[in-house]
Amino acid sequence: MKVPILRLKDILLTSIQIDLTDEDALEFQSDVLRNINETEAKGIVIDITALDVVDSYMARMLNETATMVQILGADVVICGMQPSVALTLVEMGRELIDVKTALNLEQGFEMIQHITENRGR
Amino acid sequence: MKANDNTHIEEEGAMTAKKKNQRNSSTPLEMQLAILDQIPTPIFAIDKDFSIVFMNPVGCEWLAMELTNIVGKKCYDLLQTPHCKADTCRVQWAMERDAVFVTRNEMRKQGEVIPIENTAAPLRDGNGTVIGGLQYTLDIRERMQYEETLLRQSETILELSTPVIKIWNEIVFLPLVGVIDTLRAKQTMENLLGAIVEHEARVVLLDVTGVPVIDTRVAQNLLDTVTASRMLGAEVVITGISPDTAQTLTKLDIDLTTIRTCGTLKLGVAESLRLINSQITAL
Amino acid sequence: MTEITGVIALQSDVVQARQAAREMAKNLGFGSADQTRLATAISELTRNVIQYADQGRYTITDKSDNGRIKVQVVVEDNGPGILDITKALEYGYSTGAGLGAGLPGTRRLVHRFTIESKPGQTRITVAMIKKISHS
Image (tube, rainbow over all chains, first blue to last red; front, side):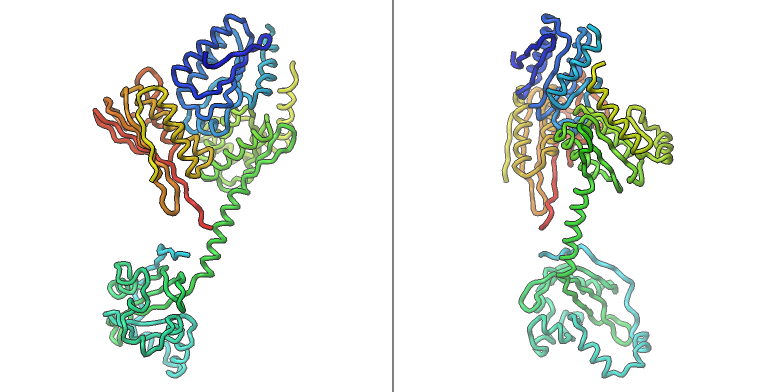
């Protein structure tokens, strides 16, 4: 597992620290889903602070992962997008869709707790 | 400093000699010559073979030569400018095309190479036939310094005109003023996103009262700015959209329903505070 | 003139190409936003090579001259080619398993964008340019 996934009570936390190839990204997606399933976590925060390039493939992968996680009944927050990355995605027309985003880990955590509590689970 | 050779003005041919004679007939000839002698910038004339037939005193000073050593020599040998003997020589154009040309060039003034603006015109005889060329030259060092200053100032204005200010915990304010072209829009978005990160802002208050024209392109820029800000976890409140603009944008079929807008800045501030509170408190 | 070139055959080459592009842009003095734009564009283009052509080549060159800095990247392959360039440049067009050729989006990121394509050869040239102000 190239990208470690940590657990804090019923929230999962994962931070993508390396440049992922397409294969790595798919593996990451599977790991996330498997973890959500096995731990019965209510939410996951995906930290992309270290990604200085998010191209259309990665953007799609993040979007898809969020959708899949939600189908499994959990919530997702993506945090830490770099300003240059946000800029580039918008200019390309590939912005993240329907995924909640937070500026950093702290805000991300607050947000995921807020959402999961409101879910009443 | 290198002179830019990117300015030239074409004008219809000079007045005929006849008309000129009529105009100056009231001034004594000696005075006319004295006036010519005292013009404080170089003036010279050449024949069609580029031999100098006239050079005024200041022109001689610039060349640091005696008049006797100047008359009869080829202008390109004495002046040696980048345009000399090239197909960009303006006095050649003037003689061939019977028109006036103004251009930037370089020339030696008392040993030093300086940027100049040169005007070249056709020289005619009493019948109006072109017999050579007439030129005058201006030292434009001061003018170029001024242009340089203007350029730097406008760059500074560009930077200063997209200030993002933190007005509250987690709220940043961006008052947009003036015409937003693509370059400014990109610059503004970069500044804003940087400020969101720096101040850990959750709300951006964007006021467009000072933007005179909001057309499709500017509206798209605003939409992009909102989208990018959201990806950094910040919500955007736009204020200052005039009734006219609201009308125009709706008619252009631009979907602004996903953007939060408030009529006035005051309402915008209130909305921003509300958003902050509602994000913090768990219901 | 500095030039970096490499093969595009493995997925890791996509990462390498975009990192090299970013590095060159950074060294030439481009800002962080432009670096990211270029790196992202290269990522898209090199990935397309792997997706549609199996193998290709990238070349990153410093093409600066007085008055401006310029970095140029050429991505080429010997694949089947883009059959209809006009269509490929229409927003939203994509063939293959839906990964998206992403050409219109990529084009928006860079300052210069040229495609030459015929069956058996495709070459895409992009460049980022920055004017230097005189002082």
